[in-house]
Image 1: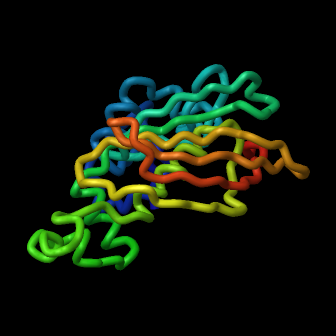
Image 2: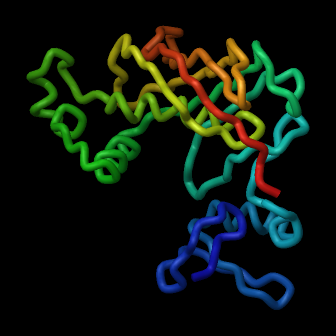
Length: 212
């Protein structure tokens, strides 16, 4: 099965949305978004090791321009080769109705509170809200902005307020303690556009070097 050279996703040849030829070779893409990225710099995606990974602030991050996945990130890291207390990353994204429905399909969490308007109107919230675990998933998206390969060890969460469908959220992860064995303790927080905390907690992660 061919692999999308931009995002690294396997693409069934009979189900591909986009293809192109480059220097006599055919390439297949999971979406027209990936095709457009490829066409902007085909040599990079063909000749560079891990060409699909993102570069930011002079370092390579284990993030992919994955199909139609949306969101923006920034990093505040003093030395990408040596993470330390105070280094932080942020990831921002609008949670859409499509996100909610795809999450329900992927996890089988079909709680009517998240999917059925008539049902949700009769609850304490008065309308549908986003799955709490979908909201907390933005922390994982933020952690993937650290240089290296971040591996979850533990996570403590406190949900402060519900998130409405269509809200834009920002997750921030900040290193507060360097532990042994390339492990770090971080504060993890998600805020909405009104600067209200919707989720607060702490995490412990292991950060390995990126594979060569």
